[in-house]
Image 1 (cartoon, rainbow, N blue to C red):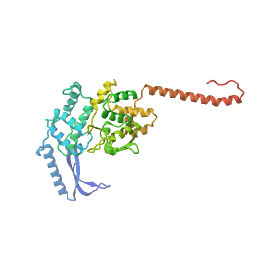
Image 2 (spheres, one colour):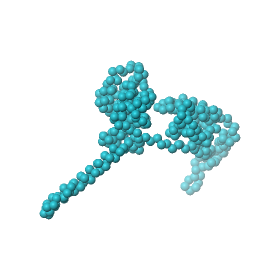
Image 3 (tube, one colour):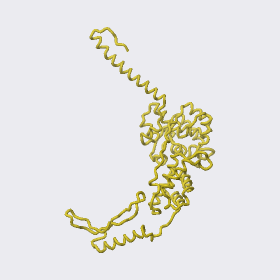
Length: 381
């Protein structure tokens, strides 16, 4: 920091005078950031410019002469939810819900006064105290999504110079154990369907035969369904991974879409409707159907697990399945691919068959040699 000129290889100063001065504070580490600026060939002008910058820094950070606008945390949440970058998110509705929960705990606090210890207390409360009006507490994954939203709000506020630091920076995410390997048999699938109303059964059937995410199915429109070629064409805007995907459908789904196409609505393009309006959830009817079918601990999203597992059992290559379902990484695919006792038993049967084929091949190869040498005994299989 200071006033200087760059030096040549021989150590002689050359070029214009440069000043280096403090510009701000890193919101994550709290360390001072410095910046450099070329002034010219006058040492006196460089000294004056450096003095002005240092005076500004003292006013801004140390002497407190520069008055800053204060924000309550609830104001930051409201400001964030009105940003285009937030409104275009597919999870915007969930962000609104999470924002309300955050406002209950931090809303009336000055955004600059929230500390990491307060956030850790919030995490503990969410994990130990039942939700309002309910008996269950929040799961670690849900609390992590709240913390991620809070961190995002602060980062954007720092960018706009509304606050200087992000209190979430030194707060660790909670360990999650949300991996599920729940799949159902075709008989269980049929049992669940038998207890569902028609509009919900259509959605469950589509999920079972395509492995599509629930949001992709609820948001499916007729311009994405190619009946002639027999596939669903999802664009980047339709998918969670922002990558286009083509999903071919079988005869069951073709018949289903043909039936639904007979009652298409003029007011909207939604494929799945109930009483003329697009469907955005079937959770209640699905849970009731699972209870009646005696299928426990099963969610709509588990149909995606079931599809992956069934495709693998059918002998479809893993890369093809990943292309159909939109899994970007092998590790994520493996989370949705369940290996059960039937798979293990089949693997051992294949292994034993392979060994027998090797033994048989070796004995058949040895038989002509034995005949040539005049040995009459036959090798036993």
